Length: 423
Image (cartoon, rainbow, N blue to C red; front, side):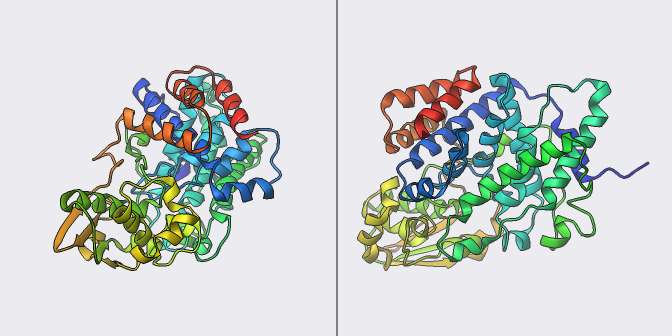
């Protein structure tokens, strides 16, 4: 008997039906993504992208660029990636026949992205943007047509989807060099993963073959980019339930420090004088930026995030824009960041931080929005409302988005709404 590859096992895993509760969970992530897209309309970065990109008539083209701009998109901790910005444009641009079809595609897109991303090790993440590397697999799963799964077609369906995974995985990537230079590359990674997944599906449907062992083969993705890849697992519960919502517009690695700073400020009444932040190694690697020069720098700066909590309180989107960067320079100079080995030891299962100021210390193990400390549905709706308002849209558009995402039955109505927002 021929050995079954990981992508064949993944394809089989994705053919399961999606239950009603998981579809409802997916609706919350849809609303969250819509809020991120709407809010990005006002970002300083968005204006440069709009002028640089020759976008086609489909409104989803621009939504692919906007979904990650504010750094408020959903995140999966163990795989250290952001599924939503890739999966939702793919699920919607596949022209689904119904809302259930849209939600099912998205759930399976999240599953494939996380299933692959959770196998990457620290060596991979040290150089590769996991969202980009695993995202092509999620895009394939979200684009896929699942409406012809009669028992007689099942083996062919698995073979064809495996070919698409192989094609997409053979050209995936996404290097972190973008963190060291001013560029639009992070958003380009989202667009490229989306396009690669789409193209892989189309060619696989036409009979073009991709390698079955693209992940674990001797010259496959693991051999090229990992030292000790983790086993791929196939849990019964859909993994979209594991995905965290981000309450603040900064890199997720900065969120534990924000959370701990807010708690310590509540305890002390104020954060004055020197502040010590202890956190895990990856948070230092990505977000130790004492002197941010741009909006992106500020969103990836623990010093800036903690300084704004000290001076202003709960972070707002405006607190990461150019004016706030200059305003908080003195406050940032009071913030020292260092690694704590005990906190690193609990990562990535737990994103933690410890803050010390004026002789008092607060430590948090899991940050707001994680499964252990979830945002309520009300909190997710309020986040979407604030993002849509920040994007300059009227209250009626927030009502429209909440209704279409949480109760609507027509995916075309969502496409129309995006067209209204982004045209």
